[in-house]
Length: 119
Length: 114
Image 1 (cartoon, rainbow over the protein chains, first blue to last red):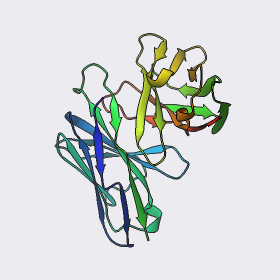
Image 2 (cartoon, rainbow over the protein chains, first blue to last red):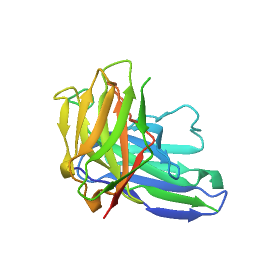
Image 3 (cartoon, helix red, strand yellow):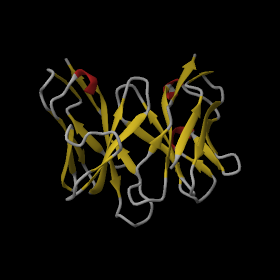
């Protein structure tokens, strides 16, 4: 199957700093990538949908100025947590959708996740 | 809007026993349904998906799920549990929209006892 990587896998930062997380589709082109957040022992909550070359679509309640998403190429999307605070500590997971928009139903492939700890 | 309910946050079975993880969905339009598995500190791996073809879907690692429209269910089963099946399992639903974003259930942690 297709492979999605995330970097870094784990990051610890001080409150007030910004952290960038990368999501890459390694062997396919992804016109759409999704960013999820997972709290301990909880399910995944969709944060935003990232489309290559256009602005991300954020879910209700997600601050777009807080969580900056850039999808500059068909294989890379980045999530930047700006001015991070302890409540932003979480497990962030991206997924990339393989397939052409409007084509046969395609599959989302998930990255291994990034654990962010804000002190 | 769509939603997914997973009954039982924890399920414990003996090695070799039947695995049954329950998932019920709510959707105003025909849904696409998925089961994912997550091992500790890892991302999600697709087990299987239902996309309106056969109602009985076979996936990886011996898992299968049956779509029952009348019961709005998509339960995951495996005839014989293996120790390596211990993980968190998520049921998810997606509508036939351009975004194809997934809505996840709350997850079920499967424990396999020797």
